[in-house]
Length: 198
Image (cartoon, rainbow, N blue to C red; front, side, top):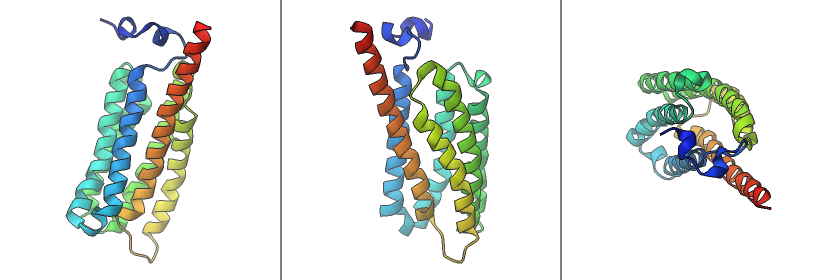
């Protein structure tokens, strides 16, 4: 059965976001929010846990992009997400290697990743605007992620010691924008449904 055939009637109309996209954004918010909470509360004082979380964050991003792309026609039809998937896998590996050297190296890897991921996320959101709408938060998130790249790299070369707590704010902003996107799509669809019924 095709996805179009399985969707409720309102979701077939142009401009409605499929329910899985809202669930996807909520899931990404929940993961990032928990990651940030654990990073600040526990991981910054437990190096082994911090290491697992630092590798796991880009690995989760790769999985999330893969799942999202599969629900949107596959990686072949979503080049920005394909690139994001590959870049996130490479980043997870690079973080594991950087952890053998220093947290400064890890922060540089995260900074470079934030730049690439932000641009690719922005491209995905712009492409999605025509079909689902309410993508302004994802566009802002992508743009801010690209800007955070320079900030993290600058911190990595500074004199102050760095750790997972320096990366957590980046993840926190991501969580915020995913929550805003999920709520925006929910509100937008509710308004369209009321307009259609009225």
